[in-house]
Image 1: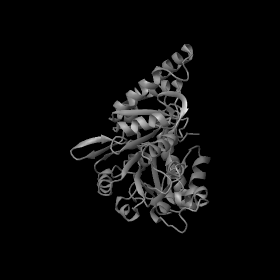
Image 2: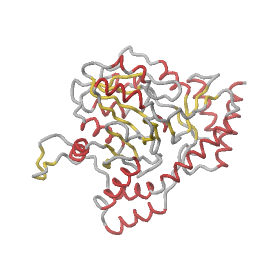
Image 3: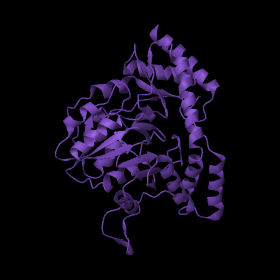
Image 4: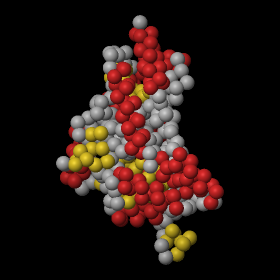
Length: 376
């Protein structure tokens, strides 16, 4: 089976993790601060704070902005449920916006109609490594005095042209959030990071992630905090991976170029492409069925591919269809046609850092054969 994602673990990561184990500093220690400083430098922010996972990073970002019961946060409909949960955890309401056909990212043209007097922030998701259209989103946020949260869990190193220069996602809005799960470009096995240039947000996140101990008296708590720390062991792994980030990004670009060359003749597939003014990191090579595009056919295709030894994943289920959120009384009767369409037709193919050209050729061969058998 060719896995949908297989990581590469650097020599430095193994060295640093072994150092943690031998020193006994597995919970706290030097690697946490080194990882935070290194990641802030990589993204281009003044501050970065490790967290236990990407969902925790989102929760801390929403909490640090002061979002509370009665507030609303705008989020795209096509995303992992963590995006909405971070808002729900604070007693606030996620307000959905449909996505663009080209990227699956939030559609800037549909944001303003969802803004109310209760809106506090816009949460942007850079889906599958493709950056969202940040320039119009920033303009809308400034106009309505809203904070911008970037969910960059899948987009380590992706860039957007802002004015005359390029900026990495996670450094563009008020606060950025990353995941270091095992399938991410930079991984710590499990973990996350909050990035920001705002010292107040930095200090708030720093306090909240560690149970909000009173700075003058430890084990004394004046507000509700969370236990969202990353271990020194995880940070050691993450730091070693971060040192190879440019190499890993080059591998992703190489992979995407090969897939584009080899799949471009398959009329039934819509291939992803880099939008003007953006640099994708191709976290996953995400395609869509075209001529035979519906969920039944898509799922049948994925079954055939699995039988041929090719692992895949379907696109996210839209938030407006998630039972856990519907039980809360959210999104009743709401429809998001583009999100639903992409969810029905989309899937991604093996795209891990350990993928080889031989495996890519096998995936392409299996795709061609499977689509032909499905179409005939």
